[in-house]
Amino acid sequence: MESTLIPGDFIVVNKFRYPRQEPVYIPFTNIGIPFTKWSGTKQPERNSVIVFKFPEGLKNDPHNPVYVKRLIGLPGDTVRIAGGKVSVNNIPFPPPKGLTKDSVKNRDDKNVQIFPGTEMWNDDWYGPLYVPKKGDTLQMNISNFLQWEGIIRKEQGDTSLVILGDKFFLNGKPLNHYITENDYYFVLGDNRDNSLDSRYWGYVPYDYLIGTASFIYWSSDPFESGFFSGIRFNRIFNTVN
Image 1 (tube, rainbow, N blue to C red):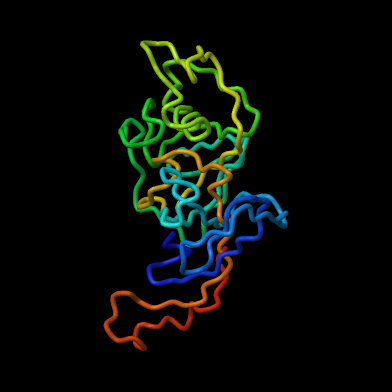
Image 2 (image 1 turned 60 degrees about the horizontal axis):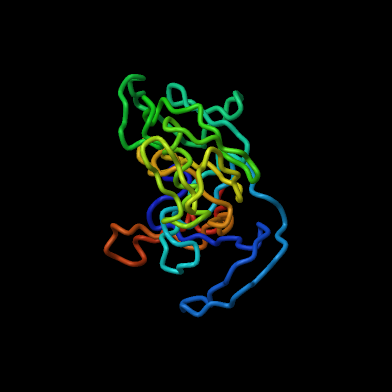
């Protein structure tokens, strides 16, 4: 996110923007207030800077790493990157302010770490990738298994899904299709050439969202030895957008 946020920025997060129901933890403690519920002010919006728990962690673990990325794809969207340029539903997506690219990777240069791992994709040539929404019917086969596996294991439990040859079983029953129980999102870092985001680990479930980044309340250069010499006064109280 270095075109928007840089190391040493401390931000205020609006946690009451999205409707949700989950435990809230008392600041600076591991003490949870269970079943806290609020209606929120609106649903997640495309192009907003969101704060969320890393999808590979546990959603109710207060120690789970927290990420800040830009929301690109909403539930039901199709995301594509061609030559480093992003489009959503075949409509060009505006690049973040300050984004620069010195070069674009070759289209045939496959990155084996790229999600879902079955396509000839890389950071600059990616997709099209569909972002699932609640109630979608996902057809199960060998070619798309890696794309949907994480969703099923998150929603049903890690040990619920079993693969035997080219057959799938969910809780002991044959699985030909799966109906999603949550909405999902696709996010990118503003520093596209150096960002671990949805291109690498896939979708962000709705219940992993924490809120939106509001503004920078403090900023200091972590590489400066002097406290006052490292303060970035020109960044304090800047909004994040």
